[in-house]
Amino acid sequence: MAKAKDSIKKISGKSKGFRKEFVEFINRGSVMDLAVGIIIGSAFTAIVNSLVNDIVMPLVSLVGGGFDFTSLSVQIGDATLTYGNFIQNVVNFLIVAFVVFIMIKALNALRARAEKLKKKEEEEAAAEEQKAEDETVKLLREIRNVLIKK
Image (tube, rainbow, N blue to C red; front, side):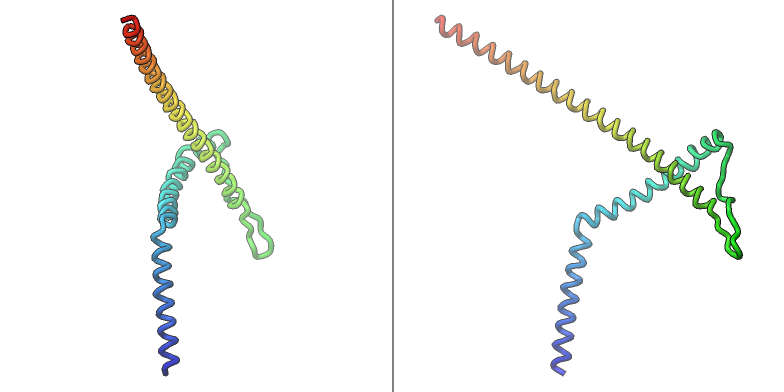
């Protein structure tokens, strides 16, 4: 009976430690960041899907004559291989990947432009500061020269 109580204490002690570890794991920033990333990723997926399905695909259909591969299939015995679905999903993936690529490229261009503007502002501020220092040094030299003459 004593052995059973000791075993129960060991197990419950381990579960408290395990529970504490689990709570610490959940409360770490990286787990929370991952959760936020997944949620934002889901919302972003909806935006990209809408862009592709509602804007890009109609334009592609106009150019390509409204192709749809989903009806392509082959009958082998009792099995039907709908390889058209696979082809359509590959085409959709390539279109989505291209749209995301263009979006990332545009965002990177905006980021580069913002950094360039920030750098220019910092350079202008440094030039203003240097000009103020130069004027101060010039004024101090003039004061020194006047004092030396006296």
